Image (cartoon, rainbow, N blue to C red; front, side, top):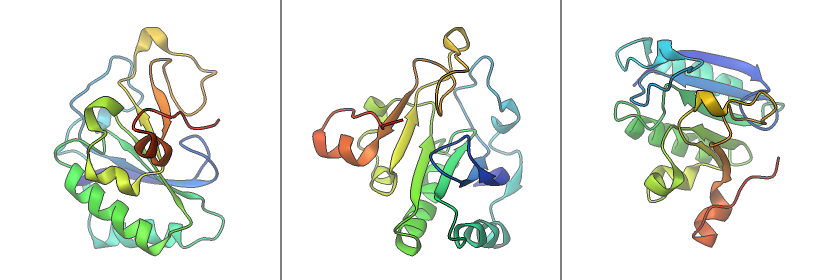
Amino acid sequence: MRYHNITTDDMKNGDGLRVVLWLAGCSHCCEGCQNPVTWDPNGGLPFDQTAKEELFAELDKDYISGITFSGGDPLHPSNHRQVRQLAMEIREKYPDKTVWLYTGDTWEDICGYPILQYVDVLVDGEFHKQEMDLALHWRGSANQRVIDVVKSLEAGTVVLHDE
């Protein structure tokens, strides 16, 4: 797994003050994407022990609400396994912090993925430039959904996250 950046004290990519891990690798390649530099799965830096320690040092801070996985796409084949492992470790070490994940995949295509047991909120769907709306909260285009994963898994259908 490779990454481009770890953003601290972020308020735009999820609820509260968050740390964001920007992963490398995306096969969606949406027109108008805000991060096309992250599409190449071989770009960025290796996610090594030093990067993990940096991430956990941020999560150790009481005022950090949680982590957001973005990119690129955290569910890209080059990321999926390691992101799941990392999300599991974060859930175990920080049970009161929330885990958000952005993906170009839709809920319907991934609702059976094991990683979702460690995710609180999923923002799904490819970015559609023609549906872009700057007034949207936590998403870039109107087709994307901000999904409450826990409630959706319990209900067996999509339950949107309260904004």
